[in-house]
Image 1: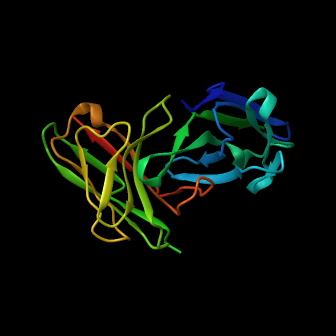
Image 2: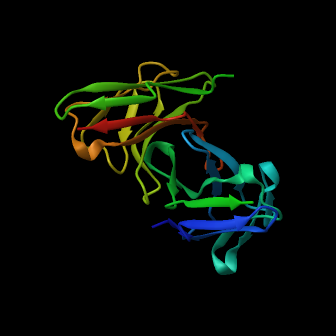
Length: 116
Length: 113
């Protein structure tokens, strides 16, 4: 069965520091992976997605993620954190159900705090 | 663009009451779904639909009903609210395809007392 594990429920960085949010997946087939961001009292917004091909995926707001099949990882990074990056981040893997619906299996989320 | 619109934003119910959470999308997406978000558990799928007239159960369907009479609308009904249904509910829509992202509404925060 496919699953996603996010290491670290809370991450705190200084403004300007590197952001690294970890995601490991379990999948018996080539995965379709996503990162979403959730700002307070809002829905989830797509940051980036991985499909087969390039291993480094660029997303919005300066975020990128690297797909490493050998490590079954899809970690999210940003070179320099900004105060506005404070939010909760979710990694997800797509699973096809009966009837063709593509369900997302989400990790538990990582809350990123950015301090001055 | 409105995207996915959910109403209400907040709701408080007493145990045993029923209510309907509304969801509408204007992107002509075939797929729609309802997820619930609980602390430390990410999002879990309640029900989904692959088109008008077609619905199916997700991981946590008990206590919820859905219907899909039009492409645009996908309401979620709580038949007899229980405290365990206190959660934040998100509606999402998407196109077919494993690499198609979900587009989420802003959520409904439900408290059952």
